[in-house]
Amino acid sequence: MTSLVSWRGAIAQFGRSILQWMAGWVRIVHFGAIILVLAVTPSTYGAANRAAMARHIYLDTVPVLLSFTVMTAVFSLVLSRIVVVTALSYGLTRYAIEMVIRVLVLELLPLAAALFVALRCTIPSGSELARLRRRGEIDAMAVTGVDPRVREVLPRVMGGMVATLTLAAVSSVGAMVLSYLAMYGFTLSGLVGYTRMFGQVFTPAVAIIFMFKTLFFSLTVSLVPMASAMQDHRAGDHRTSAELRALVRMFAVVLAIEVVALVGNYS
Image (cartoon, rainbow, N blue to C red; front, side, top):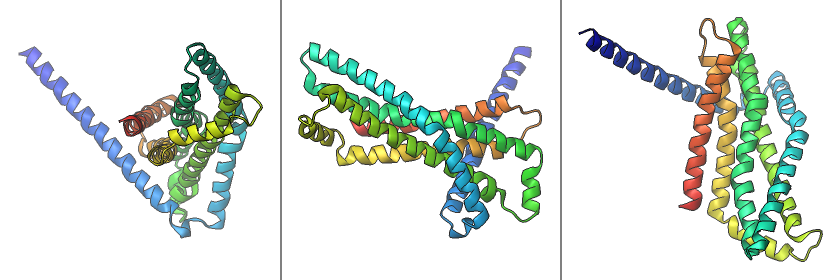
């Protein structure tokens, strides 16, 4: 009898946990939709809001641009050289650069840019937003007639999106240049074949999937931490626990996007 009661209690607790998890995602999706509507509303971009947005875009993009570009450039050059040398030894030269482009530009670099921005910028910004809410500054701002979603949340979201798109674009261009140099060296003799191969990889369907995947990555790493910070307001919360919840939620969405993109590219 006691074991039956304990099993019922465990099942009930599990059911409550599932409902709370689903409710949390519904609130995050709803909050994200509100932020996206505010982002396309012209009245959002007043002078004060533009200044806050420009500040966050600068702080989230410029300080990390050089370090991320150098890191991905070194990784791209090393990987390209390894693939090219290995392909030459097996007589598969024509497939070497195509594989590098598919692995680096299509898959790894957009994902790396999104995760780098999340860990470096948006998750810490979400934790800062959560602290502002716990201290009552968000509610005080709303009382004075200032919408905190416009003044505090939207600039952080836009900063994360611009940073992700910028890092993904710069690193992808760098990887394309370095892969060409790894294969052909400092000569223009292989430019025609390289361009033809690049066009064969980036078909219209693949290019569209790539653009949408990068865009959704930027939306995910920017919106989920901010929505989690605004929705999670529990007593005794610490910065580590808030960041961990945001990271788990964000990683789940990023993984889902990557899986859908892989199915679209290779099905």
